[in-house]
Length: 253
Ligand SMILES: Nc1ncnc2c1ncn2[C@@H]1O[C@H](COP(=O)(O)OP(=O)(O)OP(=O)(O)O)[C@@H](O)[C@H]1O
Ligand SMILES: [Mg+2]
Image (cartoon, rainbow, N blue to C red; front, side, top):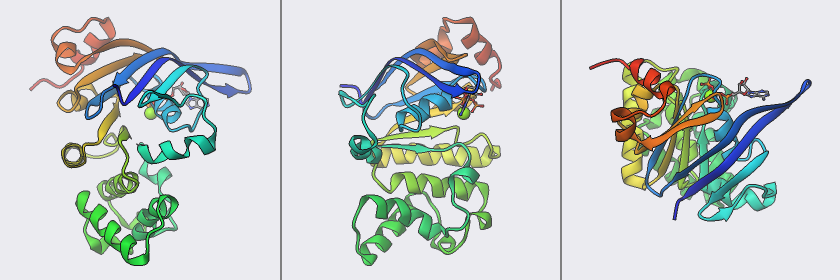
C-alpha cells in the first residue's frame, strides 16, 4: 500500500482577478521508505503541491490519500493526527524560524505541541534531535540570526523530526546554500532515511541534485506532470522533451 497517493490533483490560488489554476491533474504515489523527487523550473507548482499535502492550501480537485485514508477534505481538527505523520521542511529557513526564539525553544515548540513531556524528557529529546542532525549543544541558547545557513537548515530539520513523521517533505532545502553544505545536508537526509525509515518527498528545481537520492522522479512543467519514472529510467530513457532539456542542463561528470 502506498504511503501517499495523489490522484488528479488540481490546485491554485484565489486572486483579485479570480481563480488562478496552478497545478493540473497531477497524480503520483510514494511507497513507504521511498524517496520521490518533484522536479521542475521555478513557478512550476512544486511548493504548491507541498503546501496542499500539509493542508496550508485546500485541494481544488482530485484526491490525496495517506495510508489509504482520504485526507483531501478533512477539517483542521480531523487532520490533526496527520500533522505528526506528514512534516514539511520549508525552502526558506528565514521565513520558517521565529527570530525571537532560541534554538532550544524552537525545538521544544513542536514537542510541546504534540507531546506532554516532563522537563527532563523534553531535554533528553532535544539532545537526541540535535544529535541526529549533527548540531552541537552549544547552539541551544542561540537565536536564528546567530546561526549559519546550514545550521538553520538543520534546526528546521530537527523541528520536523521532533514529532516523528513518516513522510518528510523537503522543499528545496539546499538551493540557498553553497555546494559543500548542500552535499552535507543530502548526506544527512540519507542517514535519516536509513536510521529512522522516514519516507522522503524531495523538491528541487535541479535534476542533478535529486538524481542520486531519488527512487522515482516526477517532472512538472507549468503545473502539469510531464514525466513519472524511476530515477534510472528517467536518465536513461527520458520520454519528454522538457525532461531531456533538464538532463542537458545537468553538469556532466
Ligand atoms: N499565494 C499565492 N497566490 C497566488 N499565486 C501564487 C501563490 N503562491 C504561489 N503562486 C503562484 O503559483 C505558481 C506556482 O508557484 P510555486 O511556489 O508552487 O512554484 P515552485 O515550483 O515551487 O517554484 P520555485 O522553484 O521558484 O520555488 C507561480 O506562478 C506562483 O506565482
Ligand atoms: Mg517552491
